[in-house]
Length: 445
Image 1 (spheres, rainbow, N blue to C red):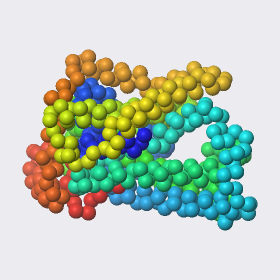
Image 2: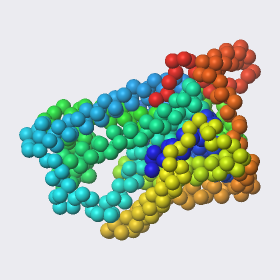
Image 3: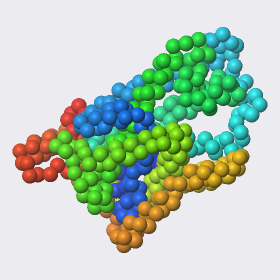
C-alpha cells in the first residue's frame, strides 16, 4: 500500500515538480477545496520537549541545505542501527549469539501466536503502523527543491519498496522470531516509558550486549529528530505553496532571502507547541489522542493521493496526451491504486470495530479513532461553500504549469537559479518567492 501510494505521487511529482506536491495536484485535478483540506496542518505528535523543538526550528530556519544535510546524517545513523539490529537478531535466532538455544520459528507456535489478541490486536496496531509509516509522501513535497527532480525523484520512489522490506518488514520479522509474545519485557513496556525494555533493546540484551540500552537511547533520539525535522519541513512547505496559490493567507507564502518560509514555519511551530498540553491532560492521554489523529490523517492523505492520481491519469488521457511522455509511470496502474483504496477502507473499518469491541468499552476510543474524519470533511465543505469551488473538468486540468522550468538540464537549472538569486539580492524591492537557489552540492535525503 505504501509503495503504490508513493508511486502514485511520484508519477505526478516528476511531471510537475512543485513544493506543494499533492495539495497542488488536488487543486489542479480535483477541486481547490480538496487542496485546502489536505493542506491544513495536523498536530505534530513527535515534539517532546522545548529543546528538541528549538533545535528542529533552527535547522529549518537556516536553509533547505541545512535540512538536507541534517536528514542525510540522521538517516545514516538509523540505517546503520537497523542493519546491525537485523544481523544481531538473526544471529540470535540461529543460536550464534546469546546463551540460549536457537529459537527458529518456535515462538510463532506459543499460545496466542502468531496474531496476539486475534483480529482486534491486528486492527489496534494499524494506527501505530500508520504513525510509523507517515512521511513517505515527503519525496513528492521535496520535488520542487531537489536538484534534477525528473531523474532523482523516480530513483527515490523505486528505492521505497526495498527500504520498506529492509527497515520495516525485516525488523518486525526479527522481533517476532526472537521475542515471545508473552515476554515479561513487553508487559513491562506497556506500563513503563523506559526505553531500556523496548523490543529493539531487548534483542541486544538477549544477545549479550548490555550497552544496547544506551546505544538505542541515542538511536531513537536521532530517529525522533529526523521525524520531526522532515515533518516540519513538509508542513511549512505545504502551507507556503497553498498561500502562493491563494488557498491560505498570503503572508504564509513569503520567504526569506535564503528561501525559507518563515511565517509558515512559525505557524507549524505554534501547532507543535500544543503537545505541551500534555502537562495538563497527562502525557499518555494526549499522546494517545494525537497518535490516533495523525494516524487517521495519514490514511486520509494516502487515500487522497491515490484518488488524485486516478483523476490525473484520466485527465491526461482525456487531453489526448501520450503516456510515454511521462517521466515516471506508476507500476501496476490502476490495479495497485485500487488495492490501496480497498486496504484503506478495511483499515478504517477495522479500527472502528476494534474501538467498539475492546472491553471495557470507552466512547473516547471511538472518538479518538475517527476524530480526524469530521475535521477533514468540515474543512472541505467550509472552503467549497465559502469560495464556491467546482470540480475541475478533465479537459481543463493543468499539466503545463511548472513543467517548462524543469525541462532544462540539471546544470543549467542550477546556474539559472544562482543567477536569479544574485539578481534578487541586488534589488531590495524584489520578493523571493521560489525558495533558495540550489548549489551543486545540495541534496535532500
